[in-house]
Amino acid sequence: MEKRITLRLLFVIALLVLSSVDVEAKARKITSEVNRKLKLLNKPAIKSIKSEDGDIINCVDIYKQPAFDHPALKNHKIEMRPSISFPSDTTTAAKNESSQRVLSQIWHKSGSCPKGTIPIRRITRKELLRAASIEHFGREGPRSSFVANTTNNKSSYFVYRNNGTKVNVFPLPNHSTAYLITLGYSYIGARGNINIWNPRVQSPNEYTTAQIWLKSGPGDSFESIEAGWMVNPKLFSDTQPRVFIRWTLDSYQKTGCINLICSGFVQTSQEIGLGSAIQPTSQRWGDQYEVDIQINMDPNMRRWWLKFGDDVIGYWPFEILTYMQQKAVLVQWGGDVYSKNVKGVKPHTTTAMGSGDHASALLGAACYINKLRILDYSLQLKYPEWAAYLITMGYSYIGARGNINVWSPRVELPNDYTTGQIWLKNGPGNSFESIEVGWMVNQKLLCDTQPRFFVRWTEANNNPPYPKLTSQHLASYLYVEGQQAWTQTSQALHHGGRVFEGMMERDVVSWSSMVDGHCKGEMIGDARNLFDIMPERNVVTWTAMIDGYMRLESFKDGFELLFTRLSKSRFYAGS
Image (cartoon, rainbow, N blue to C red):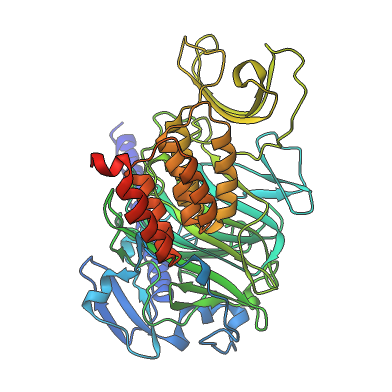
């Protein structure tokens, strides 16, 4: 009996020794792989800079950067500038900028990289060990998002190309996204000014971005090049917003990465470190900051050049691309949140997109991307056409948008009406809440059979029979349209004017909004006509009209209005 017990003990001890040896062997293997990867990622530095936020910036010889580990770039000759000058968007330069286009990185306070080097953020052992796998490090990205000419997936959204064909845009697993998408042309460039915030990220395994995408290729293996800012605690060890780039040849499956973690992107800038923290960031109702991001392909050399403001950062060479060697077919501007607690999972993540506020909060509280442009082979900057707004929130929708074809249908009886509209609803079927917008023909309510814009809302257990549109709603609409699109004045005023005409009641607020819109659009004659027929005016109306004359340097008319009309008005006397 004692012999049997002794044998068992010896057997257990042998197992423990063997398992210990096995664990040690695995640990040595992992350590060896980590050391090998760190050596590959962190190229020898000519100079290292310790940033006050804890980052270490390696100044690496421009000819020894990670890009040249790519087999297709072994004999690549670096280009420092594109062979052509891309068009600048002088038409969008605002006279009174409300946001500051400033891109400063925290490490700049501690030093600079010498000429002939590029700044590369040093990757730490802890960051590498947090990855799902060492080889997968830095490759995180949303999976397939669109498949052309496919109609068999019921969970997809439809976007129409400029030739009328239908394209499916699929929701991404574990992602909430909101973006404007345009497709169908041969795009060789896209740009936009992205508002910079520092949004909350709930978990180290989640991240949030604000960015631009250019894509081409089949949906299950598309190519994409991207740039923007992100907050990614798992990858960068903190919750600061950081500039980033990303690319893939196969929907993020086996190729591409974020920043310079893999070989491919050729950096030329000695000023901007990809993956380094940026400052300052926008404050709610305070100063607003943005970064002007441009991605343009040089049609002569087929390099996709990246610019942050006036800084040329570098390029994606055509040698590493397939579908995007000549063009992109899809451009997106927007935001993306990655979390496993989305799409109906409770509790929903609190990780924020952009500023974390809804678009209705407007400038100063909501994150934005403005001055969106695309570039094609005409080398002319253009507004995106055939565009659609998509917000994919699973079971928690926070927005909807669509282009509604406007007709003037027959309404047989005065008590009948017809609409073309969008609904957003929540709540039980017998007591739901709803907000709606569209056009309607309603002879009983509006006294004619013309199509008119309307909004409608209902609280639970209170379903009004007819839409109600107040001057406050329309003034807000006119303000939002104007703030988002004064550079597209004719379009903004066209829509705003149609809404204005459909109002049941017009007060000084809505009249003043229209006057202000026409003045800012330099349609001073139309503005004056509206001004003259207004039933009453307030300080906003007078200020808008006089400012409109001053903008156009019509000083005589402005002074006439100020000293003749205003001085004799009841408003002036009462003041």
